[in-house]
Length: 107
Image (tube, rainbow, N blue to C red; front, top):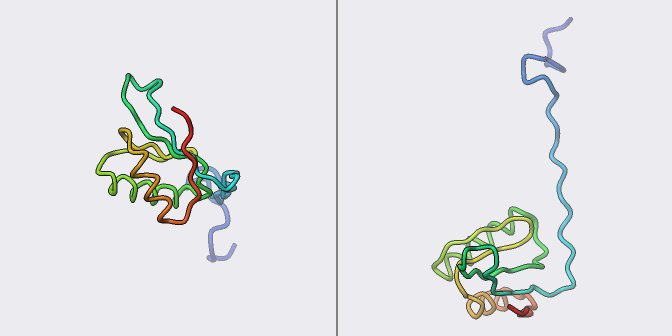
C-alpha cells in the first residue's frame, strides 16, 4: 500500500464524510406575509414573517437586520422569521424598502 492520501479509515468517526444537500428554496407566490401572533407563547406577542424565498443562511442574515432595525430580539428557522413584539409597521416598511411585495395577514 502506498503512503498517499487516506481513502477510508475507521479511526476518523466510522463513516466517510457526507456532503450536505442544499435544501430547495421555500415555495412562494411572490408575497411576503407579515402577521402578529400570540398563540403558544404564554401571551407574548411576536411578528412572524413567512414566504421569503431565501436559503437558511440568507434568512438568518435578514432576520439579524430586522432585529437590529426594530431594536428587539427574535429568531429565524424553518423559513419563518419571528420578531419580538408587534412590529408589523416597521417590518413592512423595511421589507418594501428591500423590494419585497408584502401582505399583512390577519392576526
